[in-house]
Length: 260
Image 1 (cartoon, helix red, strand yellow):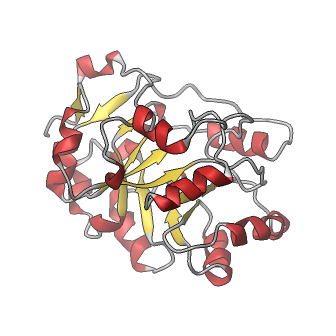
Image 2 (cartoon, rainbow, N blue to C red):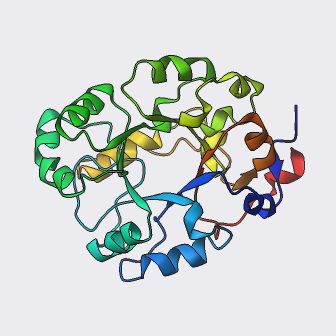
């Protein structure tokens, strides 16, 4: 197997045809979004950032994946600046406890951000069907929470419900990912913390409960390494992948690199 990890982000800058989806989770609400991107993701030219995912100032019960935090949100002005720069907004609607009533409550929010190139990230097929019917301009992305294996990816994409699927970072080391046919519709993690080694991600239910403001009955399983790693982008690009998900670069890279 080729080396799967890299000690630095140096190779990321040499590919002009690939695009990145980046997180805004560390951006203080009052910070200019383009300034934040230029600092947090300083290795990337703006035209390689395809979209930004994160939460707006408006809380909604469908938010999932990460805990909704006051003071670290995207403002309407942030979104306007992103759109002017040709960068889209990706909305994480991955709450595992979403009900039909939650969806109805969120419809004004979805209508507000409904525009070409914007995406919704979902983990539930029924929610994907609702959004596809009611808000057809959104691209619909299947969350890593679904944890589809490499052999399942093409089958899911061939169903036509999802425009893209996020490959769980758990599968990055696998040679099986080279066999995926629809690589242009697969989003691959370019770096990761616990997600690439955790086999019991109970945190997703805990975050879902937190974001819905109900008692938390789950907690982190501590089943994965908390050392951040950088994947070997050369290996992934050589396989044919062109879309990458990038979490904040200012989070320190761990010692895991020394053993792989």
